[in-house]
Amino acid sequence: MCSKRMMEVFLQLCALLLVAAAESSHRKEDADVAVIFTQQWPMTYCLYRHSHREKCVIPDNVTLWTIHGLWPKTGAFCNASWPFNETKIKELVPFLKLYWPDLQGTGSEFWKYEWDKHGTCAASLPELNSEFKYFNKALELHHDQNILKMLSTVGIVPSLKHTYKFADIEMAFHKVFGVTMKIQCIQEKDHKQMLGQIEVCLNKSLLPIDCEHNSTQGKSQFSNSNRTQKLTSLTSFHVCSNSLPVVYPPISTKMP
Image (tube, rainbow, N blue to C red):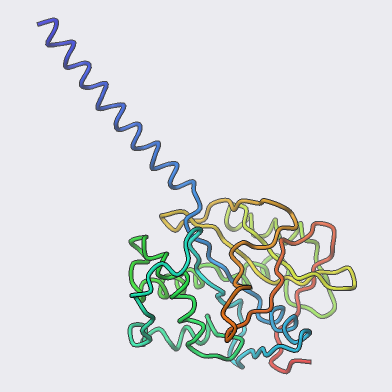
């Protein structure tokens, strides 16, 4: 009887250890960055491109931060046999034109590129395992993360007259999300920097978690600076400096 009782206790302990190990593994997965949801301020992007004599057009109906991409942390061009098919996202196209426009004016070529490079890799996650799910989830995240509104609630609004402290911008985001994200700027020649891009790190459950900061001046490893020649993306987003004032230029469809 004693031997039988000891065996029962042993088996119970083994079961508890297995459960604990599974829970620990799950917590680790939830703490790891799986995908990066990135939004850019279209005016900053276009001002930079125009300064380098590159094409950039902000559609008249675009007034918010726009989606740059939904990028898995690892992998690129994961499945060449799964080509982009615009008919799969036909009902999403009006929303993509508004919230995920191609500021370089190549139309659906931008979405094709994002799907081919990033979507086919992000599809390893259940919530992103189809072309429709991938683009629809990005739109949902954009709706939930209205950066223009978030900043305006603390008095940080696009302006030609005012500059802002980076610490105030960082604090505003942390107050809303409760995590550290990657806030990126483009440095100007007059010792200022333009607010340009926000990277929100998400775990496998697509919930915000802290982003990794390798360097306060590090260039985004998720930047699309290496797009194909046809879709050349001339950008230089770096993590914003704590010491430089931040310019947040208002949107204008009439570029200088």
